[in-house]
Image (cartoon, rainbow, N blue to C red; front, side, top):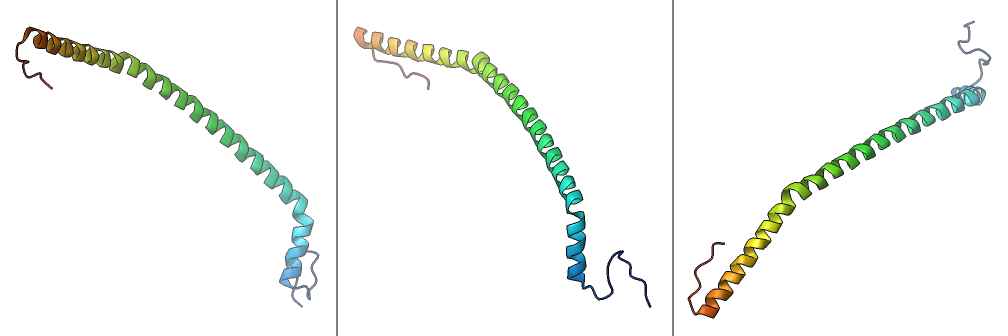
Length: 104
């Protein structure tokens, strides 16, 4: 007679019955492990999310500051040049001189 490898099982017990019995016996242990793992995953996800939000905020600040320092003065200078060209065109029209071709 062969010995049964699973303790508490009978020789006539089928694989499905063995599985159901093992799941029923170990359900509280498995549930605690699943709950613990879920909490660890949630905590890690929260930590990563906070780091991403923090670094995204820093990147937005750097981008905004760079635009203010580099692009805004350029835009103001281009606007000033446009106004100067319009004024020059208006003066040449008033004086009757043919307007020169303005550089584009």
